[in-house]
Amino acid sequence: MQKENKPKTRFLVNTVKGVTLGISVAIPGLSAGTIAVAEKCYDTIIDSIAGIRKAFKQNFLVLLPYLLGLLVGALAAFIGIQKGYKAAPFTITGAFAGLVLGSLPITFGELKKHQNTKELVTHVTSFALCLLVSAGLGIFTALYQINLETAMQNREWWIYLLSILSGIIGAFACVVPGISGSMSLMVIGMYFPILNTFATTKGELSIFAHTDDMAFVLTGILILVLLIIGALIGLGFSSKIMNKLLSNHRISTFYAILGLILGSVISMFINSNIYPKYLDGSIQTWDYITGAILLFVITVSMILFFLLKKKKTAQK
Image (cartoon, rainbow, N blue to C red):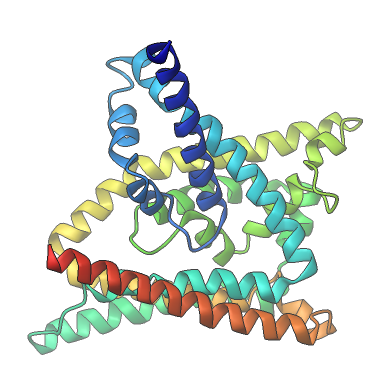
């Protein structure tokens, strides 16, 4: 009996791990890769994905509980975040920003002092360009009032192209240390428009809330498929690009990553989703206070966690 129960127990445990991975995928600032390493399932998942062609059935069965859990965790987190953002946008943003800033020790650990003027110029240029691009995206959509949510709901033709691009950017972000795919979607302004397309304020999936409108359902599914296609395309070349950059220009690459992280925090607080709320006064005073507190507490907690982990690793 024990031998029969072991596979079932393992399946259940791996499904639960998949749920936590799904939650981390949905939350900007959290890295699913980091969570997988912490839960000691990173190598298992990577090896199974790598060997899926050689032994499809065996590796698919290994991945199945993680995939099921990931879908459940991601859907639950997306619906929870969507409802939370409606009620307290600054609080949710502050929490996300805290997760991002708290991951800075990962990047700082790779930064080194320049040896000559040429290296200094390269490092500063890499940092400044990525900071401007990352922060500029959010500021641009805010100032020019580019309402991606309305375009998403109206199914404008260019939204389909942007969905593929978002998938590519999100996948690329997943292989960059300290950056998550959800965070990159938030920076370019696609995170909440996509979220609000698939989740209603009542906490249900909107594609099921519009079963009487098959065109709406089908286009919603199409957007999701295009995101997945974009993500697959992004994964196909992003790992190779990052491998070359880290191998040949490691320090400059991490200066660029630092710029992306800091710029993304700016974009989190200034973008087409939250900027109008500042102007119309829809954000309450308690929301600002709670968001500021969470930003500080989460940032400090994560930095202390990474420093403690680094200290324990050095002592081994």
